[in-house]
Length: 163
Image (cartoon, rainbow, N blue to C red):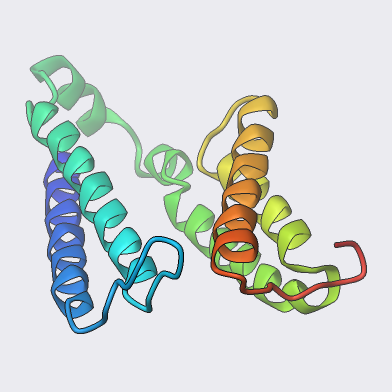
């Protein structure tokens, strides 16, 4: 059942990314040295389609349902234990709260600091077991945003008290 949800969500994301890319055709890309308004939506749409495609491939690979033993164990499990195992709803609500806090903090502590903390927190919520991976991911995303927007596109992010 979970594989079916993953397949459906990935196909919806692929469709959304494709519509995003088609809509992006209205905007010019201009030159490499002076990118136009169509560059960023093109990159976002392409990344969305690629990641959703990868998710759908992974979901198609695991479409095999649980074997009979796993099904009988799941059916024999009391309802209270199944609710305790399913903490997905709580994680989603907590993630929404973290995102709202992130949006509110961007003005005060700056984009790069709040983005760094947001990526670490969301990575840990999604199941990262160590701190090394989220910290490296966070630093990489901040560096990418700095190089893309501040250096290449000459756009500035909100500056806060920290950065």
